[in-house]
Image (cartoon, rainbow, N blue to C red; front, side, top):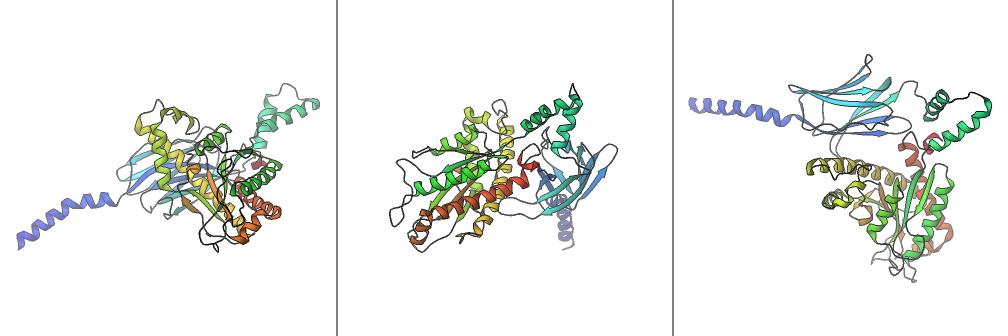
Length: 403
């Protein structure tokens, strides 16, 4: 019996390193997010970490220390245009990982950990705020003034024009569902989905084009059918920052009613990523224009995954804002953002949502959808959600961020 316990202890000691290793936190990836208010460093981890965030002044650095952790891959670098982060690196010191970010200016931070949700696992979030941060317009004025050949008053209007041209409009691709030989769903009175959603789309186009800093692009401009993948291509060719597909739902039970907002499901995203990687002629259109043609399969997969993860998160955020807009005009069919594998939502690099405005199969909602006033209310609800999203999440060099 004594020998049995000795053997049990020996086996237990041999297994101990394996158990400890299994409990270690794995650092999977990092992501960057920038708005006109702040910058964000997001670290994907396997479980809830114990961590410490430190700021160094000489040189300017942000250090995230995570004990009992391991890092398995190289971390993505911030884009050159990032206003705060210039470079990032990770050092594995025994069982501790130190992630060090070189900073472009002095900052203050706020950090917190997020529990998993339907879309993402555990995340460590560090929000970074510039000390005495100047606006993008202020920085541009300084750059223009320092390089101007003349300081005369007469030259100032030209400088203002140059500054205005440096801003970027946020482009919204509006997709009115169906069209042409495809009428979509039919209401009890024979109302065709394609007609009412096109009317709503045109009203949304007018609202967006009237908003400084935003521009609308109609995917279909008349009563004709556009292939579903072609709709995505039109949005990409227009360099759209957002894709909105507008529909009217239908169900065999005529009492069902309310609006819904959808984003792409994780399963749908994964299958689309595989399809894009398999078609090399499309690879150069992804990951912010960085070609994947000359990358090996593993690296290409990682780059596409990073692009798609950011796109899904952005889609979820804008869908939530649009859903809030619908709360003020009528009943919701689903009170939260839904996920489905709609083909038009599968662009890996453009945040995309699908709005089911109402149930055209419900006689009451069919009448509403035929009303010009109600169509305007729907368009306004979508517009307000999109505008709120852009004001919160736009980059520094967008015109709407400066409003």
